[in-house]
Image 1 (spheres, rainbow, N blue to C red):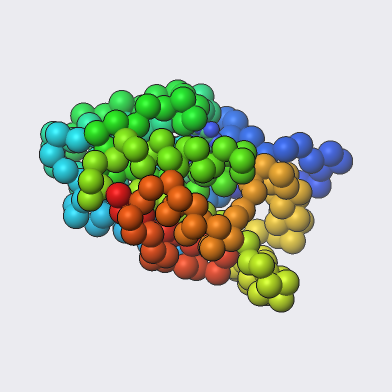
Image 2 (cartoon, rainbow, N blue to C red; image 1 turned 180 degrees about the vertical axis):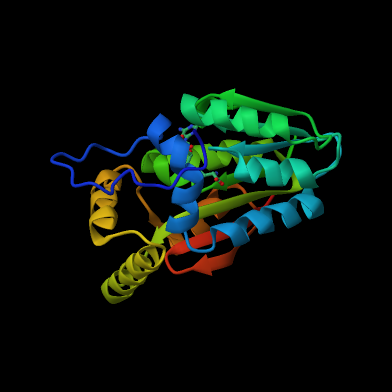
Length: 242
Ligand SMILES: C[S@@+](CC[C@H](N)C(=O)[O-])C[C@H]1O[C@@H](n2cnc3c(N)ncnc32)[C@H](O)[C@@H]1O
């Protein structure tokens, strides 16, 4: 059942397995991401307003790593009705729930939710591509090639919205931001144990880059403009224009 409170890491675990987007996570994912990512709601609103500004008639808009479809819905509600909305996720549990959510929405734009590895997704005739906290889960050495393919598939003037957890090169800034993020999660009701167990589960699964790495990689991938447009603690959102 969806919309449950996240208690995935609440009980002590003798072994902590690598984090996966399985059914147990999908059931609580909305609560998990809202209480774990500072500024998540703001980014969803931004995706809506960007969809209004950049969504172009008779193009495709892609949501890569669409999970339950929160960002996909924002796209669908705000693009012109003759845009094709394509959501992609490699987790079957997420895709099932996303399809159900999108079916309950009656916006006009047609949609296609695909169970697919985004590394195999052909991007073509795109006015908008969204990577909302997804690229961080793809092997680091493959990220540039993915961004290049995305840039090649975006029409001139089209955009990529890239949101990621970031790391800082300075030790003191890195440790301050990690502490403030920990405090944020405690304030959201997570215990120290939950925070610690999830951190272990995410090690080597979520691999963050620095702001500078993102900006230079977006330029190298072929975007003409790349700016940081939102930052909340160690979570940053970049807007790249083709
Ligand atoms: C943090 S969630 C994304 C949240 C979502 N974009 C939102 O705005 O609510 C990351 C998602 O990316 C998916 N994912 C990770 N690696 C993927 C890949 N290689 N191909 C497709 N989906 C992937 C996961 O299954 C998960 O649902």
